[in-house]
Length: 302
Image 1 (cartoon, helix red, strand yellow):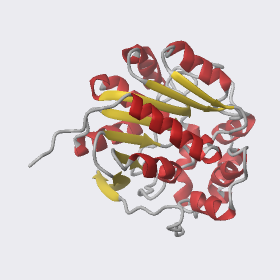
Image 2 (cartoon, rainbow, N blue to C red):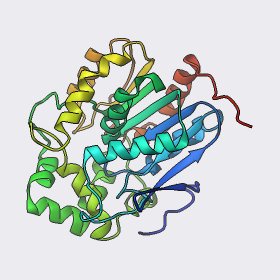
Image 3 (cartoon, rainbow, N blue to C red):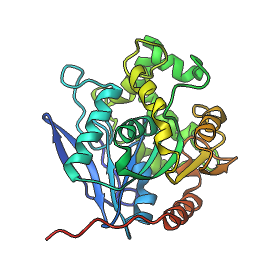
């Protein structure tokens, strides 16, 4: 992979060995635990501003999924690029770090992954912040945006992703709508995916989208969706870029139906990478939310 400039990513991460594969994660600050879970094709870089905001009084954990960011990128013969594997990886990281009373902050695929974990460990979850994501089946049924359908279902789409890094580069252009992403930041987003082998996860994530019974991960989505009522009293913040062409307003409406108690903050001119389009506003919203719903810090160990 290419070098990521410190101006965009001023963090030194840690690694957890998962069956011979190194999972990279940030572990910043101290206090109540916050875990931030990214999607595809982003990586922990996406959360850098919220890490800076919350690590002043929280312990902020930010993993890179296997195959993404600064984590190892094994081939299909060594790792199963499925939703089930992602949930297992997150579970092992949380258990390894001994995290309880967790605030979950998630975007894109990170919502499905983190909420699958959360639904199985609801007693360990104290606050939820969801940004343009889902934790239930596509409310539009089998309908996918044309570009996503192409990648998921055709050899041409696969070639574009792995041969030309089209998914990662395309996201730096189409997923921001309020302001263009700078060339240096776009280069940082795409740096972990410099060649064919390093782009395996950006393709497998799309191919793993579960739409029908029998698709890998479909049952996990169903199970998670059925358990979301466990969070009926959990403080929840929904942050939404309304110009997202993937997680559009149909997904937000489903969140609002299931979480009528949630605070909802909409950004009509922002896209899928809503945190890139409105970083200062969102940092302020998240800060206000966590301050309004305090969580006691973990006991000190001797």
